[in-house]
Length: 140
Image (tube, rainbow, N blue to C red):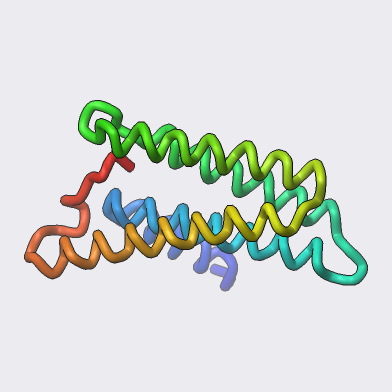
């Protein structure tokens, strides 16, 4: 088995065995990575518009995945607010992709990083209290 195949198998197992909260953090982590790629591609010399566009589209897909994972019955107002925020992110990302606007990408990156950190803290607090990491559901 090649190293690439082993790495892919490890990643697949890691994802399949992760709790709901950990999966959300993984999505946020990947969104941050993709935004970093897009920013780097646009700030580099020469600019790599195709790479930036692909990274932005991947980020939009990840944000959409977060949107569809929301539970509006259990999450109530929090789920509604997250949905509105995710819609805002996707609009910003679409505009940033059209305009190749690094400032817009950095703004979304800041928000996404803050949300990721908040989820990370929530998961850690839940684990510390003796609950299972999958026991948290803040409508996301």
